[in-house]
Image (cartoon, rainbow, N blue to C red):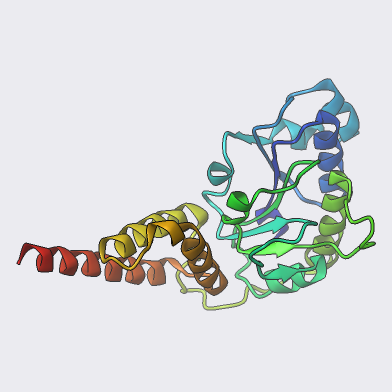
Length: 245
Protein backbone atom coordinates (compact mmCIF):
# COMPACT_ATOMS: atom_id res chain seq x y z
CA UNK A 1 0.00 0.00 0.00
CA UNK A 2 2.81 2.48 0.81
CA UNK A 3 4.10 2.24 -2.76
CA UNK A 4 0.65 3.25 -4.05
CA UNK A 5 0.23 6.31 -1.81
CA UNK A 6 0.98 9.66 -3.44
CA UNK A 7 1.70 12.80 -1.40
CA UNK A 8 0.44 15.84 -3.33
CA UNK A 9 1.50 19.40 -2.45
CA UNK A 10 -0.53 22.25 -3.97
CA UNK A 11 1.17 25.56 -4.84
CA UNK A 12 3.88 25.30 -2.20
CA UNK A 13 5.43 28.75 -1.62
CA UNK A 14 8.71 27.87 0.07
CA UNK A 15 11.07 25.36 -1.57
CA UNK A 16 12.51 24.46 1.82
CA UNK A 17 9.13 23.00 2.77
CA UNK A 18 9.24 20.73 -0.29
CA UNK A 19 12.62 19.40 0.82
CA UNK A 20 11.42 18.91 4.40
CA UNK A 21 8.38 16.99 3.13
CA UNK A 22 10.65 14.74 1.03
CA UNK A 23 12.72 13.99 4.15
CA UNK A 24 9.57 13.19 6.17
CA UNK A 25 8.35 10.92 3.39
CA UNK A 26 11.60 8.96 3.18
CA UNK A 27 11.56 8.50 6.97
CA UNK A 28 8.22 6.72 6.57
CA UNK A 29 8.94 4.75 3.34
CA UNK A 30 6.72 6.95 1.17
CA UNK A 31 8.22 7.52 -2.26
CA UNK A 32 5.67 9.26 -4.52
CA UNK A 33 5.73 13.06 -4.37
CA UNK A 34 3.65 15.21 -6.72
CA UNK A 35 3.92 19.02 -6.85
CA UNK A 36 1.10 21.13 -8.26
CA UNK A 37 2.39 24.49 -9.56
CA UNK A 38 5.15 24.99 -6.96
CA UNK A 39 6.36 28.58 -6.73
CA UNK A 40 10.06 27.60 -6.84
CA UNK A 41 11.28 24.16 -7.88
CA UNK A 42 13.86 22.73 -8.39
CA UNK A 43 15.77 24.57 -5.71
CA UNK A 44 19.04 24.22 -3.82
CA UNK A 45 17.14 25.01 -0.63
CA UNK A 46 14.77 22.11 -1.25
CA UNK A 47 17.72 19.77 -1.83
CA UNK A 48 19.42 20.99 1.35
CA UNK A 49 16.32 20.52 3.50
CA UNK A 50 15.74 17.06 2.02
CA UNK A 51 18.90 15.96 3.86
CA UNK A 52 19.47 12.79 1.87
CA UNK A 53 16.02 12.36 0.37
CA UNK A 54 17.24 13.79 -2.94
CA UNK A 55 15.94 10.76 -4.86
CA UNK A 56 12.36 11.65 -3.92
CA UNK A 57 12.87 15.20 -5.20
CA UNK A 58 14.44 13.93 -8.41
CA UNK A 59 11.44 11.67 -9.10
CA UNK A 60 8.84 14.26 -8.09
CA UNK A 61 6.01 14.70 -10.61
CA UNK A 62 5.20 18.31 -11.55
CA UNK A 63 1.61 19.09 -12.58
CA UNK A 64 -0.18 22.26 -13.66
CA UNK A 65 -3.42 21.44 -11.86
CA UNK A 66 -4.69 19.29 -9.04
CA UNK A 67 -7.04 17.47 -11.42
CA UNK A 68 -4.03 16.42 -13.50
CA UNK A 69 -2.21 15.18 -10.40
CA UNK A 70 -5.14 12.99 -9.35
CA UNK A 71 -6.00 11.38 -12.70
CA UNK A 72 -4.76 7.90 -11.79
CA UNK A 73 -5.99 7.89 -8.16
CA UNK A 74 -9.11 6.07 -6.99
CA UNK A 75 -9.10 7.49 -3.46
CA UNK A 76 -8.34 11.15 -2.76
CA UNK A 77 -8.00 12.55 0.77
CA UNK A 78 -7.53 16.29 1.35
CA UNK A 79 -5.80 17.59 4.49
CA UNK A 80 -7.26 20.72 6.06
CA UNK A 81 -7.26 22.45 9.46
CA UNK A 82 -10.12 24.83 8.57
CA UNK A 83 -13.83 24.12 8.97
CA UNK A 84 -15.94 24.33 5.82
CA UNK A 85 -19.47 25.60 5.10
CA UNK A 86 -20.39 22.27 3.50
CA UNK A 87 -18.93 19.48 5.59
CA UNK A 88 -16.90 16.66 4.05
CA UNK A 89 -16.62 13.23 5.67
CA UNK A 90 -13.69 13.65 8.07
CA UNK A 91 -10.92 11.29 9.13
CA UNK A 92 -8.10 11.55 11.64
CA UNK A 93 -4.76 10.11 10.46
CA UNK A 94 -5.47 6.89 12.36
CA UNK A 95 -8.99 6.61 10.95
CA UNK A 96 -7.50 7.25 7.52
CA UNK A 97 -5.18 4.27 7.90
CA UNK A 98 -8.02 2.07 9.17
CA UNK A 99 -10.03 3.01 6.10
CA UNK A 100 -7.13 2.32 3.72
CA UNK A 101 -6.82 -1.17 5.23
CA UNK A 102 -10.26 -2.00 3.85
CA UNK A 103 -9.19 -1.29 0.26
CA UNK A 104 -7.47 -3.64 -2.20
CA UNK A 105 -3.72 -3.21 -1.73
CA UNK A 106 -3.20 -2.06 -5.34
CA UNK A 107 -5.58 0.92 -4.93
CA UNK A 108 -3.89 4.19 -5.84
CA UNK A 109 -4.34 6.82 -3.14
CA UNK A 110 -3.56 10.54 -3.03
CA UNK A 111 -3.23 12.54 0.18
CA UNK A 112 -3.37 16.24 -0.71
CA UNK A 113 -1.86 19.11 1.26
CA UNK A 114 -2.63 22.73 0.42
CA UNK A 115 -0.80 26.05 0.53
CA UNK A 116 1.18 26.95 3.64
CA UNK A 117 -0.87 30.06 4.37
CA UNK A 118 -4.37 29.13 3.22
CA UNK A 119 -4.61 25.38 2.65
CA UNK A 120 -6.93 23.90 0.02
CA UNK A 121 -9.68 25.88 -1.68
CA UNK A 122 -13.24 24.56 -1.83
CA UNK A 123 -13.06 23.74 -5.54
CA UNK A 124 -9.96 21.66 -4.79
CA UNK A 125 -11.72 19.85 -1.96
CA UNK A 126 -14.45 19.06 -4.48
CA UNK A 127 -11.92 16.64 -5.99
CA UNK A 128 -11.42 14.92 -2.61
CA UNK A 129 -13.59 12.20 -1.10
CA UNK A 130 -12.53 12.77 2.50
CA UNK A 131 -11.12 15.57 4.60
CA UNK A 132 -8.19 14.63 6.83
CA UNK A 133 -7.88 16.62 10.04
CA UNK A 134 -4.98 16.17 12.49
CA UNK A 135 -6.18 16.55 16.11
CA UNK A 136 -4.19 19.27 17.89
CA UNK A 137 -4.52 22.41 20.01
CA UNK A 138 -7.77 24.08 18.92
CA UNK A 139 -6.27 27.51 19.69
CA UNK A 140 -3.21 26.84 17.50
CA UNK A 141 -4.15 24.27 14.88
CA UNK A 142 -1.91 25.30 11.97
CA UNK A 143 0.80 22.68 11.51
CA UNK A 144 3.98 23.14 9.51
CA UNK A 145 3.59 21.40 6.15
CA UNK A 146 6.36 18.86 6.72
CA UNK A 147 5.11 18.19 10.27
CA UNK A 148 1.64 17.42 8.91
CA UNK A 149 3.07 15.00 6.34
CA UNK A 150 5.23 13.41 9.07
CA UNK A 151 2.22 12.76 11.33
CA UNK A 152 0.22 11.18 8.54
CA UNK A 153 3.24 9.24 7.27
CA UNK A 154 3.93 7.89 10.76
CA UNK A 155 0.45 6.39 11.02
CA UNK A 156 0.77 4.89 7.54
CA UNK A 157 4.17 3.39 8.34
CA UNK A 158 3.03 1.87 11.65
CA UNK A 159 0.39 -0.13 9.83
CA UNK A 160 1.71 -0.78 6.33
CA UNK A 161 5.45 -0.64 6.97
CA UNK A 162 5.57 -3.16 9.82
CA UNK A 163 3.30 -5.88 8.52
CA UNK A 164 2.14 -7.50 5.31
CA UNK A 165 -1.50 -6.68 4.66
CA UNK A 166 -3.52 -9.24 2.74
CA UNK A 167 -5.55 -7.56 0.00
CA UNK A 168 -9.23 -7.38 0.92
CA UNK A 169 -11.92 -8.11 -1.64
CA UNK A 170 -12.34 -10.42 -4.60
CA UNK A 171 -9.30 -10.82 -6.80
CA UNK A 172 -11.56 -10.66 -9.82
CA UNK A 173 -13.38 -7.51 -8.73
CA UNK A 174 -13.32 -4.49 -11.02
CA UNK A 175 -10.79 -1.79 -10.01
CA UNK A 176 -12.06 1.35 -8.37
CA UNK A 177 -12.74 4.26 -10.72
CA UNK A 178 -9.91 6.78 -10.73
CA UNK A 179 -10.21 10.56 -10.40
CA UNK A 180 -10.13 11.18 -14.16
CA UNK A 181 -12.97 8.72 -14.73
CA UNK A 182 -15.01 10.24 -11.89
CA UNK A 183 -14.54 13.77 -13.25
CA UNK A 184 -15.79 12.61 -16.67
CA UNK A 185 -18.82 11.11 -14.92
CA UNK A 186 -19.55 14.37 -13.08
CA UNK A 187 -19.39 16.33 -16.34
CA UNK A 188 -21.79 13.81 -17.91
CA UNK A 189 -24.08 13.97 -14.86
CA UNK A 190 -24.19 17.78 -14.97
CA UNK A 191 -25.03 17.74 -18.68
CA UNK A 192 -27.79 15.17 -18.19
CA UNK A 193 -29.59 16.83 -15.28
CA UNK A 194 -29.41 20.13 -17.16
CA UNK A 195 -30.83 18.50 -20.31
CA UNK A 196 -33.82 17.02 -18.47
CA UNK A 197 -34.56 20.33 -16.77
CA UNK A 198 -33.79 19.19 -13.22
CA UNK A 199 -30.99 21.67 -12.60
CA UNK A 200 -31.61 25.30 -11.69
CA UNK A 201 -28.66 27.37 -12.99
CA UNK A 202 -28.37 29.40 -9.79
CA UNK A 203 -28.11 26.26 -7.67
CA UNK A 204 -25.93 24.14 -9.95
CA UNK A 205 -22.73 24.57 -7.92
CA UNK A 206 -24.22 23.58 -4.56
CA UNK A 207 -26.24 20.70 -6.05
CA UNK A 208 -23.21 19.27 -7.84
CA UNK A 209 -21.11 19.60 -4.69
CA UNK A 210 -23.65 17.55 -2.75
CA UNK A 211 -23.96 14.99 -5.56
CA UNK A 212 -20.17 14.62 -5.52
CA UNK A 213 -20.33 13.85 -1.81
CA UNK A 214 -22.95 11.16 -2.39
CA UNK A 215 -20.99 9.35 -5.11
CA UNK A 216 -17.59 9.87 -3.48
CA UNK A 217 -18.78 8.02 -0.38
CA UNK A 218 -19.58 4.91 -2.42
CA UNK A 219 -16.13 4.45 -4.06
CA UNK A 220 -17.52 3.29 -7.40
CA UNK A 221 -15.66 0.66 -9.37
CA UNK A 222 -15.31 0.90 -13.14
CA UNK A 223 -18.20 -1.51 -13.85
CA UNK A 224 -20.54 0.44 -11.58
CA UNK A 225 -19.47 3.67 -13.25
CA UNK A 226 -20.20 2.20 -16.69
CA UNK A 227 -23.72 1.31 -15.53
CA UNK A 228 -24.36 4.86 -14.29
CA UNK A 229 -22.98 6.39 -17.50
CA UNK A 230 -25.30 4.07 -19.44
CA UNK A 231 -28.30 5.31 -17.43
CA UNK A 232 -27.29 8.91 -18.14
CA UNK A 233 -26.98 8.22 -21.88
CA UNK A 234 -30.40 6.53 -21.90
CA UNK A 235 -31.95 9.51 -20.08
CA UNK A 236 -30.44 11.97 -22.56
CA UNK A 237 -31.60 9.94 -25.59
CA UNK A 238 -35.09 9.52 -24.14
CA UNK A 239 -35.31 13.26 -23.46
CA UNK A 240 -34.13 14.12 -26.99
CA UNK A 241 -36.66 11.71 -28.53
CA UNK A 242 -39.47 13.33 -26.56
CA UNK A 243 -38.41 16.76 -27.76
CA UNK A 244 -38.35 15.62 -31.38
CA UNK A 245 -41.90 14.31 -31.07
